[in-house]
Amino acid sequence: EAQVTQNPRYLITVTGKKLTVTCSQNMNHEYMSWYRQDPGLGLRQIYYSMNVEVTDKGDVPEGYKVSRKEKRNFPLILESPSPNQTSLYFCASTRQGPSSSYNSPLHFGNGTRLTVT
Amino acid sequence: GQQLNQSPQSMFIQEGEDVSMNCTSSSIFNTWLWYKQDPGEGPVLLIALYKAGELTSNGRLTAQFGITRKDSFLNISASIPSDVGIYFCAGPYNTNAGKSTFGDGTTLTVKP
Image (cartoon, rainbow over all chains, first blue to last red; front, side, top):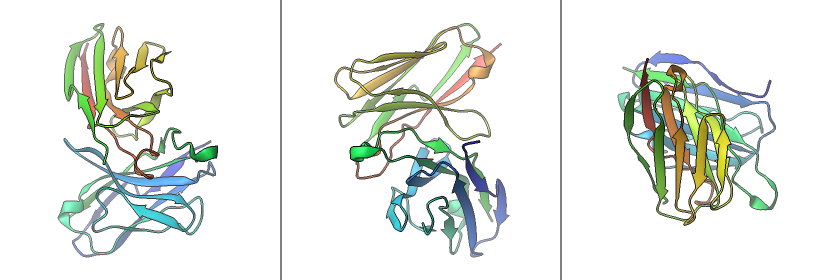
């Protein structure tokens, strides 16, 4: 089954304790992206990756890191989490069509609810 | 960067009523995408629009790509309780060098 898998689904941690949220897709998609969802603020993009070893900042990258060493995996790293990073996080992926037609729909994971105390 | 204004922010309707929501953009799009997020899940694509003026249906859902290429609307006819969720519009990620932008969402509540 084609899917985007995030782990864990729920995570409670303390301020300053490094954590990683994993994301894996089995659709051979080039494009992957991370979002956070907060009440009243919709989906905001944290980082995205157009392909292996190519990553770039979204709209809210502060406090986050990513890596794209393999096509299928795009982990989100919080080196020193803070309470303002308490949020619902989504990973998404899509194919990058020919001729730079970057308009294919995103496939989302089921989310990771992170609480930082 | 590009901005999407989605309205209304929330809707409370009776089962059987029709629903309409829309999105406007500060820039011209070549694609409009509508997603639905069920409670506790990730967003899922409902309808994709690729041509100005295009009107596309998916069951009780109908969406249109505005002629100006700066707006789109989504209609739901004869709403049912499982229509509850958050509906997002989105543009393509090519218009902003790889970044993707979503509207803030319309939260729909359907009373039986």
